[in-house]
Image (tube, rainbow, N blue to C red; front, side, top):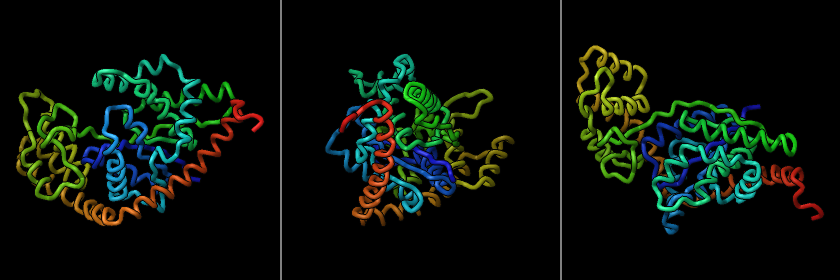
Length: 327
C-alpha cells in the first residue's frame, strides 16, 4: 500500500513562482506514487492580520492555482481546512500534551512575532494545529524543505508524548525532503520573493508580457561577491532549474564556470522556459475559473472524505482520553 502524505498551503491569494518551485510541482510528482491529502489552511492564515471579506476569494484563488498546476482530484484529496473542523478539536487535545518549551523555540514563531504589534495565542500554538493537520489523517510522511524540519520534529514529539500517555495511536510522520529552492525578490535578490513588493514577483497568472518585463528587469550583480555567485544571478539560476531542462541548466552552469556567461542569454533562456512552463498552467486556470462550481464541488467532495477519516481518528482519540463517556 502506498504511503499517505499530507501537506498544506496558506491561502494568500494567487500563487507565485516561488510557491510553484518550492511546493506545488512536488505535490504533482508525489501524487503519482502516494496517497496525497492536500489542504488549503485557512485556520492558519488567521494567525496574522487579514481582511475577512477577502478570505473566500483567497481560498478560491489557491484552489484554482493548485488544480491548474496539476494536482489531480482523481488521485489526491484537496480540501479547505475550516471545512473539517475536527482539526481544531484534535489541536486542543494535542495541545494538552505539547511541550511549551518547544513551542517557545519555534523559529518561525519568533520571526512572525516580530512583524506584529501583539502576539496572539493562535500564533504561538500554530505548530500544534499543524501537528493536528498531519496526525488527524495518520500521515506517514510530509514533504518539507529543511526550514520546516523543526515543525515536523515537534509533530513527531507530540505523537510520541500522546502515544506514551494514552496508548499507541499516531505514527511518527517522516520527512520527505524535497528540493525546495528559496526564490528571491527579482528587484532585490537579498530578500525573499514577496507579493507585497511591486515588480518583485512572478505570479502564475501573469501574462507573457508581464513575465518578460519582470525577467528583463531582474537584478543580476548587486556588488562584489568574492568567489560566490551574485545573489541576483543565483536567483535566475534557481528559476531556470525550476522551469528548464537539465541540459539547458547544465549549459549555462558551464558558461558561468568558464566565465563566458552573458546575462542577456541567461534571461532569454529563462524567459523561454518560464513561458513554456506557465502558459499551460494559466490556460488550465482560466478553464477552471470559468466553472467555479466545479472547483467548489472538488473541495466539497474531498472535505467529506476527510471528515470521515477525521471522525474515525477522533473516535479513537476520545475513547483513549476518556472523553464523551456515557454518551
